[in-house]
Length: 513
Image (cartoon, rainbow, N blue to C red; front, side):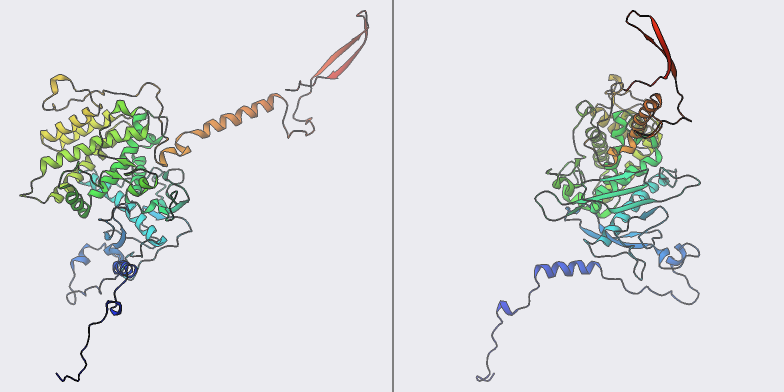
């Protein structure tokens, strides 16, 4: 090289274009919105693809092929899961909506599917919230329908108001409770509503609809209310209320474990030991942190017993949830064999059986005033009918006995005999009333307390008083001669000696109250 040719010095770092952190975050979010390529054409004239064979007759693409959606796969604070695309196999229309679930409210315009029939929107937007919330509700309903179908009990799982003349869907309001730190299911409004708020000392708003756990929990209330309409009423014993709240928490756990990527994350996080710290056992982590907790709203991996819980439904629910979580960990440990099957696959399979067992046991329990022992005894019966090993049946018995749900006779400390129903150990006191103050918004709605009856009684007492005192019109109005009877009386006037000097007939006015 000619010595006169200037040498090219390396550029200073300041001249090298380096993507900023906000730009990298933007690119990462934008990649989630990338659309797939064009659909592959059919192999040739007259041929049919497997997709065409699976498509319902008469329904054209793209709707018959299902929809992809972008959603939070766990609570927003669980970074290792984050947002991912998922596939909903049914027909999903703009809104999004389907035959059983519709988006309500005018604050979020209906979300339109793209050219491929998919709902892939930018995170942290109202449209994303609508799609995410719909997807979790849809996945929850589908999960329980599959659980019953797998056990040979296929049914559409009606909402509480459904009948042969009313097939109205469940309405979902992702931003239905502005500046409210709660969420609820309402049967009278036929809806789910989710709140949003800014925690004290913070600037970022927390949206409860973005929590996979909260949405699935509230949907669990709606599912169970369709099956056991009386259980949600506050006049039930405390344990019945605990079953409802527990089913919401278990729904969040079961829905997470219905997805293989979450099973894989749990296995990696715990090294296949489910009693180690894991996001699976913490319910609604972001919401719990906003309320000052160091974990979620509730912890499924707990050691509470019935005698410790009292009548507080929030605490009682954790007893049943904890027992089921222990059964999950036990059966997973029994069936785990890394040499033959991936641990995440085993967890996915075990959780699938257990959620069906719990749902079928709840359906088989009494329609009114059900207890933990009622449901746990049905779990024992159904597990044996499913042909499960004796170790699994014993684990169910022992885990509920440890929570003081069962009183196990000394003679059956070994293998649990077929057909034996165990008596409850700790029961609700006669006339015990539920304390729902620490529960979710669903359990605290007035419609489940029959308070309208109290208000009507007070109004009735007022009406009776008015009738008894001749008040048939507004205060100060002239007495009605056509509606009010007039009483007359005779008055005698006497002198000082008491002798009668005159008599007169006058109107007998009622005394002032």
